[in-house]
Structure formats: C-alpha cells, structure tokens
Image 1 (cartoon, rainbow, N blue to C red):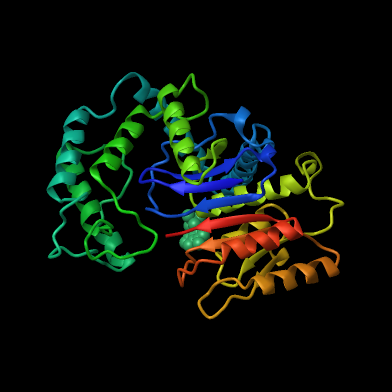
Image 2 (image 1 turned 135 degrees about the vertical axis):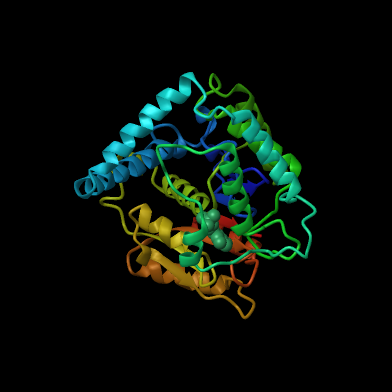
Length: 365
Ligand SMILES: Cc1ncc(COP(=O)(O)O)c(C=O)c1O
C-alpha cells in the first residue's frame, strides 16, 4: 500500500511494505508550490519496496534526468559555447565560497532579510489594504526589475533594494485575499524549519551526512502512515503530485511484473492505466515517461459531480482486456483539480480487488 501526504515543508509519498501484498497508493498533492524539500531522497533504501530501491527508481530517475541534461547540454553547447564559461565561472565561484565569504556584509544581509520578512508581514498579519500582487506586464517588469549578473557585485544597500523589489512584485500567497486550492500557507514554524534546512545545506543520501534529518524523515513518515492505519508503512518524499503519481505507477507496474526493472516493457502486453475524465493529466504524463504511452491511459466517465463511475471502470477494463491489453493501474482522486470531487473509493477498491489492479488515490486539497 502506498500513501502520500504533505506538510508545510514537504511533499511526500508514503506507502506500505510492498511485500504486504496490498495494492493501493495514496498520493497527496496539497500545500504550497514552494515547499522546501527538507527531505528529497529516500534515506532508508533497505526498507523501501524493491522497485524504488537503489538501482531502481531513484537511480533510474537520476539517470534519465542526467542523460537528458547532458544531451541537452550538448545541443546547447554547440550553439552557445559561452555556457562553458559560465560553468567554469560557477565552479571557481564554488571553490572560492568554500574558503571565504564572497560577501563581506553577509551577516548584515541575513538580518536585513529577517527584518524585511517581519516588516512586510510576509508570514502573518498582512493587511488587506496591501495588494495580493502588484502586477506588471512582463515587458514592464523586465524594465524595472534589477536583475543581472555583473562582475562588480553590489553593495548591501543595492541588495536591499533588490530584495524589496522581489517582495513588492511577487504574489503574496499569505495575503488574506489570496485564494488558490494548491496553497497551504506559510507560518513561522515552517519558515524557521526551511531556513535552518537551507543553512545546513545537506542532503538525505545517508545517515552519515544527515543524521538528524534522517530521523525526522523516519518520524514524519511513520506518523503519516499511522494516520492511514498502517503500522508497517514506509514512504518517500516527493517534489509534488506528478512525481507522486509516477512513483505509484512505477510500484503498480513492478507489482504486476517484478522483472520489468531488468527487462523493460518489451514483450509485455500493452499496460493500461485508468483515470477519470476529471483526473489530473500527470497520470498521462507518467505513462509517457514510463514508456507505456499516453494512449494507454483510459479516460473513465464521471458522474454529474465529477466522480468516477465504477460501472464505467468495469466496462473500460473489460474493453482493454478484449483488445489484448493488460490493465494494471487505476487512479482515483480525492479532490479533483477543477471540481474538487472525491471518487467513490470503496467501490473502486472493490473493482480493483476483483480485477487485480493497483488502486492509487491522488490527493489534492
Ligand atoms: C489532483 C492533482 N493531481 C496531481 C497534480 C500535479 O501536482 P504537481 O503540479 O505538484 O506535480 C495536481 C496539480 O494541480 C492535481 O490537482
């Protein structure tokens, strides 16, 4: 079983030990877009389902991204050799920051940031007389915004001016009149955690490099899996809903065909996923990324309130089997993107149990 949840600081996917035999995932996609990835990689590989273990998803994802990145670089570099210079400049900057501060007034700048956040009430207490956004057309904004990379650097006063601009022209998601279903807001505790996380600037590779965060990660995951009633659950932090849904699809595919990690999908019947006509497009994106093909995500009819019709699912599964395909994954949604509909999970779970399908619940608030 898999489950996912979100806090102020992180997106996360949580799942039960795959060996439990349960076939369901629960993917949460709520909260602010700018979540701080306090934990971005699985720390406890040994406890994770085989398909997500080292050499599995994490590695292959990294490879895809890295391969894509390097071939992109090749193309970009052919046309723009100056990229190399930027890269060289960047690495020498990195070397320099390792030994000495690159900005003499660093401490003053940090105080200035804190001051700005408090003074402009970026976390709580923003007045409704402020605008949610001081909107400017991109062309106009480009003209006033102090953005640039220069050799000479800038003074603390100039930094302050830039920071004020950043705040002034940004959307204030904490404003009492800011309404959007995808934001969970910010508070002092979350921001403090984010700042400390950034200042420590570590990662989640191993216990050796992140002893505290690994324990925090373990704790958060176990708390969340417990909420869903699973005492032997495990999880993985994910950078958003699309990635969570893709993790779920990877696990479902692995459950059906454990060899797929080695063999790929060659020689298999086309694997087919199902999502309602209100489901998020990230399910199709996942099918595309996993080499299953977007055409193999079947759109299942929903009722007048946007909930997937279980009988339509049964029919769609039968039709897929009749044309020689292998149904493997059903995506249900708890809070569809447009209507906020909740699919009938119990009925869908019954269909999935009968048809031997993995049920994923994509949660969005
Ligand atoms: C129901 C649902 N699932 C998945 C997603 C994708 O989330 P993300 O943009 O974080 O990848 C969204 C985003 O709006 C959504 O509403």
